Image (cartoon, rainbow, N blue to C red; front, side, top):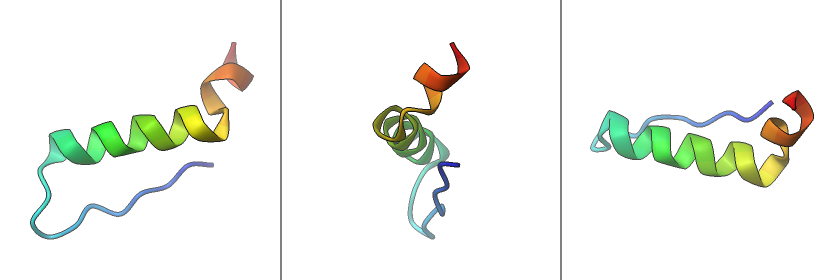
Length: 33
């Protein structure tokens, strides 16, 4: 399971972008399909 922690000075947009990138890297999206 991909997991990220939102940093204090980070926007939600950039945190979501990081989360999507980590999901793609770990192959979660390919597993779901």
